[in-house]
Image (cartoon, rainbow, N blue to C red; front, side):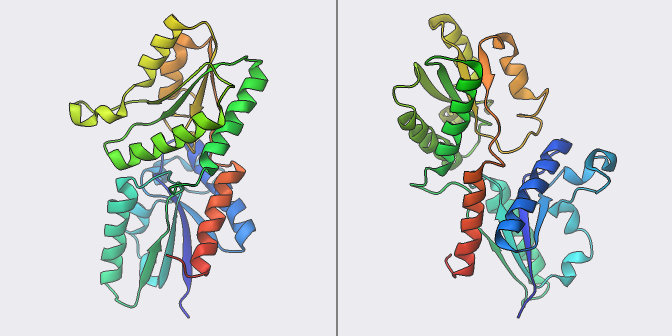
Length: 272
């Protein structure tokens, strides 16, 4: 029987808090599955200064594939901490693994499904819980709610946000004054118009049209350079800071962990 290595992978970040978050999720996932889950970013994280990580260097698949260690691997399972099929998961990682496998055809690998799958509303329910927590903590009454993600060049990834957004909208029915999905940023060109509206535009428009407070529901898992302290989202919200409250991130929400556990149970049962 082959020795299987299990990797919980995110995109990687130069923000040490993102690595800490990934490690905490991996630790919890390991305790729930009795499997040795190794937290590894795809890129960037190995550059974080070690003293910012409690003395333990962050790992990345990019760095590992340049080392001798993969020559000892026999079977690899990649557990994506991604909402949807970004190119990092559907293109970059498979190519790296295929090159590794080509060196020895007895090697095998599997990349499990991303967090969101059609019809599954657990991410939406996690968001609604975060929104409700924020409303209660700030004593808001029927606020405006904007669901924001990073923005993407892939329509398929954008469609995942839109499906989650529709689920959130239904779950919040009657509890909010207005709801919108939006992107933090987008590429130029009409072919990327599906990312609109941008968060900054939504906040500007709502600040003129409404007097209600705003809850920014963050479709982010870890506190990287976008959703972390002093990050891009904080900067975009700063002109509206008196009326905007951001939700906690989703990475360690129980529903996210439930999904990850399910992916591993499905693997054990032989489901694709």
